[in-house]
Length: 233
Length: 229
Image (cartoon, rainbow over the protein chains, first blue to last red):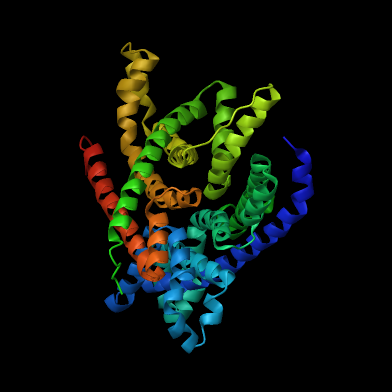
């Protein structure tokens, strides 16, 4: 075991950590916004709205993320002329854009399914009461259904965000220098395989359990009304 | 657009290997999970802590990092240890062997949690009755707890399988010619990356659909003896 290999390369791995967090944050934010719309569409009674969303969710949950990344990153090359014609090629050429796009679409599908469960779990009496007060449509969703659904879905959504954080390691395969990418580069140069990969694993462990800690804190906050004693304390 | 120029057979060949790796890893995960869950529920503190550490670490580290750690790290670690004892050996892992082992080891942590919940879901009275009838701890485990636990474990185990079969795609990074790697070969040869990768994704989707069907059948079968209101 060569400790100096680890200490010498900690700064580079921390640079990778910044990239990992950046990709995670952008994908989670974009995925969440998409999931809000998709989940509402997936409980629609209109077949033409519901079915395409169902198929989108089924495809992205039923195929490996790495394949999705390859379809977007390498697959877009097949449509290079069409894409440059509409001026989108400069985006699809960049691995960062393709990585974030595929991660966002993937997490949107999983989160939409989680949120749909939350929406269906909202107490019907609350919706009736809101309707009786004259709320409908967007207002009803914004004030009553979505806040309640988010509370119900939060524990499952926490897991999804943790999975996404781990899944960002796949972007190293399309040449991005996240934690895993940096670790692979250093390992192939120094041949200190297990030292570097164990260090990378430890960084991921810290990130994952740190994230879980933050999300549990948020969960306590948004469900405080169910636990009045803890709130008073 | 879906003309794979005769490379379809390569995808089918890869799909076969994907399924073999998936089932191999599943078997290891099922066995490891059984041991892990018994350790977790054990009264011996050391075993419980050991199993807790295993699940905490395995569930917190990305699969890709674990795969790279085992495939590239394990041989050098063994060589370094051997060198420490003054022996010069050369270890080279077979990608298939390393892939099955790593995936099995990762998903063993997930099956551990599934089994643990399933064991706790069997009513306590069942085991107490078995012990009162004079069965030993091992016999009552084999006759009472193990057969009844499956009903609670099947939904969770199916979830693990669906995640696992998709995770086999990661094995392509250690050059095992499974479905995704073969799709890559086809993509480069035909210059139709989208068609090839999309076709591969449809094969994964087909495996998922078949798995869902199998899950429903297994759930029905495992709850034959349950009364429904």
